[in-house]
Length: 151
Image 1 (cartoon, rainbow, N blue to C red):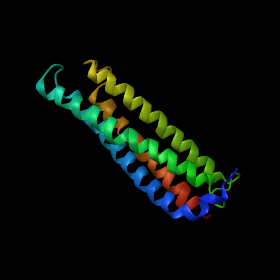
Image 2 (tube, one colour):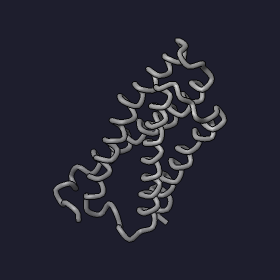
Image 3 (cartoon, rainbow, N blue to C red):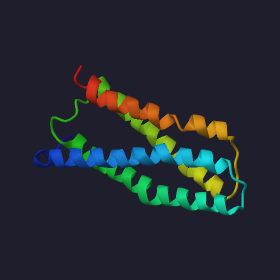
């Protein structure tokens, strides 16, 4: 299903989608890095409490709104005629990677709650590895849209 009335707004939707996705990715790159540093502190210390505030504010005021607007503008783009070929592999690749990013986002929100409760079920090494997940998903999403879409 597409909506013809959206066509004049395509470039605006695309611009806001790119800005939203950029903000979402910036947050998703930074939050796991905060977990690495947070792991290095002792629970209950002033430094640990500072990381809790940073993590909450990053998720609540940057990552969550950016994720919501990424989805909103992405849906508007998908509903614009001529934007998506529903049978094209690039579209399904992007969607799969995007759902992976959404799951990663949810896992980071869950992890933030664990740190908030002074629980640290994983090592610093685990969070360093976790920090690479959004990079891999980001690469897949960009390649799907820019390279595979035109191939």
